[in-house]
Image 1: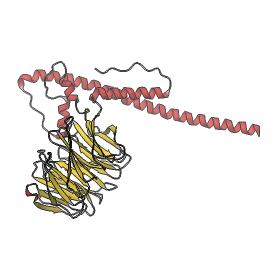
Image 2 (image 1 turned 90 degrees about the vertical axis):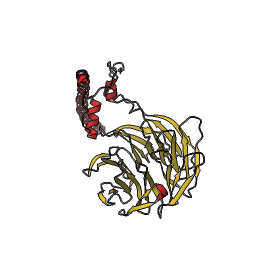
Image 3 (image 1 turned 180 degrees about the horizontal axis):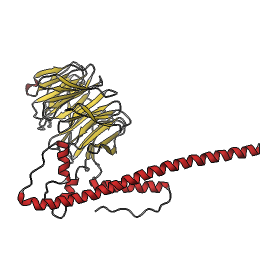
Length: 434
């Protein structure tokens, strides 16, 4: 149950704005039942800026790469020691666990890619992947392929078995910062310092579209879990989301005050987290198209961020040499889950949560069993009633916001007139004294 604070004693315009903000905050909490993210752990062991972080499938391990040329494997279990892997002869620019969690890939300034076994022995195989710094490594979802991106302006695809080179994608005209497989492995997206994001067909090996809307270099790109969208982070301080089916811009976020270095989609597809040189992490609500949280933790630029495979944790790294692990919390209870915990206490079909999922993902509605139809209809009516109530509250808040806006405009006009009167009065007094 959500309780409101005691009534305000109105003492001025600030109190009114404060009351409006408080009502809005409590209403948003009532609608979404979201909890704030919380910092769970932080790891120190690297001797230079962190360049990449990634969770293993079972969340028991976290890998991090650093400009100190080392790869660290951190145990998420308390009191367990970390592994430091040494082998690269230059800064480690990227890391990623394989889908099974049995391997970790790393790319380096030494132009090589290493495949590590994340155990105490730290065994690895190495192959020269590019003729310049390797900026990005990414496994296909089936674990059969690896895509790499480099300062040599190329994207290369390899088989994981024996690290056999398959083909190269060569249309970028500047450093390639990042390359990722789509969830189904049919597409590849790449981001470059030539200010483009390119979409490639893995089978035909052709560039099927170039997104050129960024005003600066593109540092990072990733696929939405549905595979229908991509998000890109740029040096122009923006985050952009494109539909890869229609090749059109869906969302444009200007929430950071400095370069955006990294981003990661929540597995639900409803949230996007970003890391920036302004030292903050920001959580974006993609369904509502708004900033949800701003997180402060790193002393200096936040260089990388990644959700765990299940989305209940995310990790971040910074130029402060620290790796931080956060508990997501805000995804723990969704609107549909709240309806499920009402007095009936059993799973229901046709809730607003299900409808929202169908609307976003395009899945057909589930068929309701005949013997359960009466109960489900009753529960749907209750859910609809609650939705109507919340919609009414939001509508009233919109009216309140508009009213406040009008009052603010009038107050500004009054202040301007008062200032003008005071200035005229001052002039009159000065004239009399002269």
